[in-house]
Length: 567
Image (cartoon, rainbow, N blue to C red; front, side, top):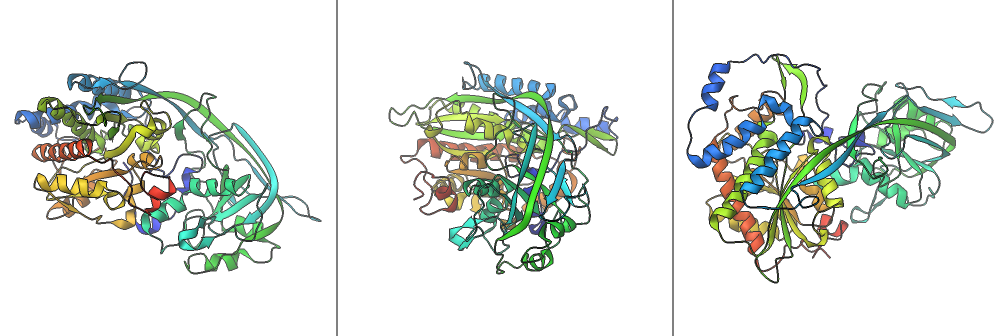
């Protein structure tokens, strides 16, 4: 799942994704050839794992025991162990009575992957009339990008600085006003104004969003600059320049290019060289960059910039897992409610206390177990829902929401038939939760539906306790949002013991080998059963409702993505 980050760090989290679909997750730990033997009290862990439980709790625990076992080696997307996990989920969907909803009459939807990275330092060369070409210095002036859509890329064009690179009428901002960037390279600052609504700000600060805006304006490429102490603003940014990234592959074996290619990032010294001789200096721009009310007018920079880049690619393959309960209502059965959860975790990495397997019990084996047990509840009740329900376990969430992005771009049901997505990602079930936090509940008619359902099972619904984290745009449901589909993401809330339990998870387990059964804080399987009960009530209410979910009129995301009911 996404990384918990502070408000300042959130300003630059998506810039490093560049050509990858945004928003970007934290990188997985560095791979290790052979995991060290875990250093732990195995006898104590075995006693916890093997403790008897009631049948409903034991069933949920059994899924997590398998999926988060050391033998699954962290379920890294594209690994043989992930493939085994996917087959396990397919078998469980079959046992729950779901019909296959993947490729060619099966449960699996193949997701072609590519791992890509910068193959060399590249070249950034400034040319100005009457002066010798000036080659920028790798690591000192710039860091190159990997381009998912091309093995080689070469551009030579004039350069225009366009502030944050944003066009946002609702905030009365147009950073392109008065400037023609057709056929030019645009340069923009990382981030977005700090006083914008956090979820909308997270959308706008994405490099992908800015690249799409740049393409609409006729630009041919883009470069980012860190300002006011943001990432990329220091003396050197060479570290991590060749970090591998992952996306899904088109039939040509390359990635999708939605906006202009983002060519790289400039440091303070690189920005100063680019601005030299212009009507304004980089120092003048930098001094105003962190003031949300400051005017950052576009500036045509002197001369041209020639950029050449090489990217290397490695092919892979993974799978989403999809199973369907057909709807029973003659008028509503062709509408589909999607229940999603990611199956992958971050694999094998840097050892911590001798343990190098990042098991991912809570992130997100528990979410997958909840999805399976929810499907079994529909079968046990024996009353089919009015709308069809698609249970979807996706790959590649940890690599940038890759599997969910692939599914929404290549759906196994007509995308227009999908009326809602309810996403389960990393529910923290180590405490008796008193409430539910439902991200996105205030943006569509799913909010009242969910609130009524959770109240009926004795749980209240609470607002987002950390709005600055912009969690609504940072898990798999957001890929459905980007197709105009009302979506929510569910988490046990932070009332009572919840706040301390969530903090303990971030501190001791998140993306660590300690996220496994038997490690403190212990999973409370009774809470797992409660969580499934709540989610079943929500899914049932959405599937059986008389009206399909609608975006609230005028909602930012519903309007942006032309969602049903938003206008």
